[in-house]
Amino acid sequence: MAESEADTPSTPIEFESKYFEFDGVRLPPFCRGKMEEIANFSLRSSDIWIVTYPKSGTSLLQEIVYLVSQGADPDEIGLMNIDEQLPVLEYPQPGLEIIQELTSPRLIKSHLPHRFLPSALHNGEAKVIYMARNPKDLVVSYYQFHRSLRTMSYRGTFQEFCRRFMNDKLGYGSWFEHVQEFWEHRIDSNVLFLKYEDMYKDLGSFVEHLARFLEVSCDKAQLEALVESCNQLIEQCSNSEALSVCRGRVGLWKDIFTVSMNDKFDSIYRQKMGKSDLTFDFGL
Image 1 (cartoon, helix red, strand yellow):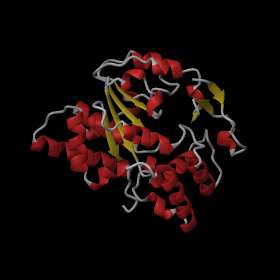
Image 2 (cartoon, rainbow, N blue to C red; image 1 turned 60 degrees about the vertical axis):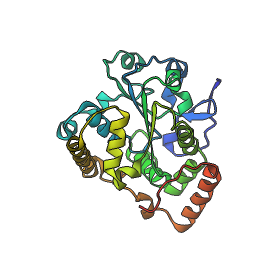
Image 3 (cartoon, rainbow, N blue to C red; image 1 turned 45 degrees about the vertical axis):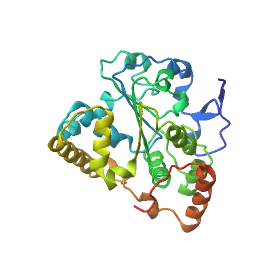
Image 4 (cartoon, helix red, strand yellow; image 1 turned 180 degrees about the vertical axis):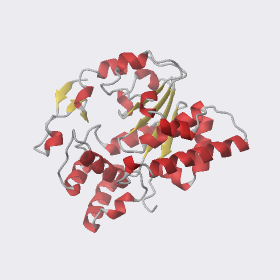
């Protein structure tokens, strides 16, 4: 697969550094030179992978997965740096070599599309948990994230940012392709496909489904205790000062989308998702 520099149009300063383009997908520049090594990354049967498109509830999901898989206490998780326990495969730190040598069971995150993940994942090795979020809330969260990061210093309007999202001009490529690609693999024995909104609609079923996939055996009382612990995590996350802009809230899009923006978004959504039976609840 050929590597090239993406032709990035003139945009605010956070896009001053050109995207790295790989096999037609825009990726962050730190992915450059790593894609072959990522494809050949060695897996272990005990690995648990969390994969999402950015701003799909990754932080909350990783805490719930850690709690369910490790039997951790929610208060303990709140005091620890969970990101150190679940490194991102493609990030510069800690790096592929260090992640490769972590002790088992390894918990690893990535935002890469399915086809760019280690080849062994495609062959059924390790467990992969994928979570998708309704794209209207996601694009608002992604915009606020870009605005909050000093390294990005995004100063464009939300309308401009949303247009980039709809036209597949952000890092990690097209959200539409990202979610549909994983949706097509939802029947793979090593893949669990989740939706962010389901945590809020029916946390009990969400946790039970996750525990079953992770082969965590628990009776009714233990499952109820797990659900209560996960609920504590959600409340802690919602009340965190780090989320002062409420990027994790369901229904976030209703506060910022205008009628015309919503009509345009719906039109693009139907165009790009029309052949898929993957649906999202925009009414929450």
